Amino acid sequence: MPDLPFHHNPTWRPRTVMTQSAILRSEFMETCEALYLTSGYVYRSAEEAESAFANDGSRYVYSRYANPTVSMFEERLRLLEGAEACRGTASGMAAVFASLACFLKAGDRVVASRALFGSCLYILQTLLPRYGVETSIVDGRDLEQWRSALKLGARAVFLESPSNPTLEIIDIAAVAKLAHEAGAVLIVDNVFATPILQRPMEFGADIVCYSATKHIDGQGRTLGGAVLGTRKYVLESLAPFLRHTGPALSPFNAWVLVKGLETLDLRLERQIEGALSVARFLERERKIERTLYPGLESHPQYALARRQMKGAGTVVSFNVGRGKEDAFRFLNALQLVAISNNLGDSKSLVTHPATTTHSRVAPETRAALGIADNLVRLSIGLEDPADIVDDLTQALAKV
Figure 1: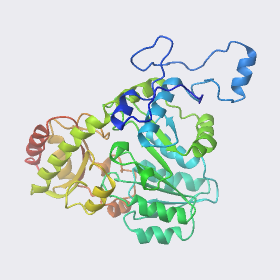
Figure 2: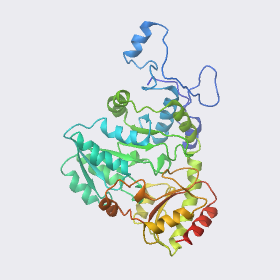
Figure 3: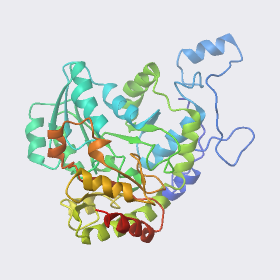
Figure 4: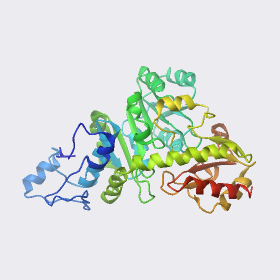
C-alpha cells in the first residue's frame, strides 16, 4: 500500500477517529469518503508501470493488492485498534484463516481454546492438519491446561473471547504471557467485543482478527474481515499471502464498513443497555434453565469480564425449556426477533447454535462446550428493550 496522506490528528480521541480519521480526499475534495470502484489503474508511461510492479509501494497497481477505499477502512480500524498495521479481507473467516496460514508451515504446532465458532474449529482441527500443522485444543478458561499444552512448544496460540455462543471469557494477559514464554504468537478473534469494548493488544496479544460483517457493519449489509498486527508481520507474512491467494475485500464493502465505523460505539452503547436489560429479565424467568451474559454477576467469569472489557457485549445466550423441541417452539413463536445466524446487527436476531452455527461440530464436542439442544443465542439490536422483552415473554408462553 502506498504511503498515503491520510487525514488524521494523533491527539484525536476514539470517537473522533471513527468519524474523521483516515479520509483520503481526491482532487474534488468530497465530504463523504470516496468509493473507488475499480479493479485496475493506468500508468502515464511503461516506465511507471515497470516501477509500480517492482513493488516500490509508490502507487496502486491492482485492487486485489490494495485499493484507496479499502486503505481508508484499514487505516481507520488500525487507529481505533492501536495496531501498527491492518489488512482487510473478504470475510471474517478469510481473516481467521489468513492470520494463521500466512506464517504457519508443516511441523508447526498451534494451541487453541475449544470454545470457538464452528468454522474456526474446522480450520484448526481439519484443515491445518492436512498441511502438517499440529493442533492442540484446551479449555481456554483453565490456565493449567494452557500451561501444560504449551510446555511442548507452539508457533501460534488462537482464542476468541467472549466465545461463540457460550460467552466464555479467557484471561488474555495470562495466556499471552504463557504463549510468549513458549515462543508462540497470540492471535485473538475479537469479534464479539469489537475494538470498542476490548483491545487485546493492550493485554499482550500479537494479532487480532475480525469479522467486520458483524458489529462493524452493524446493519446486515455486507461481508468483510480484517487482520491487525505488527508492521513486520503484516508486510512480510500477511500481505504476500493475501496478494497471492486473493481473499480481497471489495471496495464497495470497504466503503460500507468505513461508514459503519462512524457509529460503532454509539450503536454498541445502546445495544449493551438492551442486552443487560434482556439478560436480567431472562435470569428471572422460570422457563429459562440458565442465562449466560458477561454483564450478569452470575456469569462464571464476571470479574474477569469487568477487568478486561469496557462493556459486556450485545449477545445473550440461554437454555430454554428441556430440549430442541422447546427451543424450536420458542424460536418459531417470536414475532419481533428474527431467526438468523448473524449477530451484531441493528435488528435483534436469534439462532439455535446446535443446528446452525455449530451443527457440524461433533455432538460430544458440543456437549463439552455447553452447546445443548435447548441453547439459544440472542443478538440484541437497537429496538426498545421493552419491546424485545414483550416478544420474549409471549414466545416463552408457548414453551
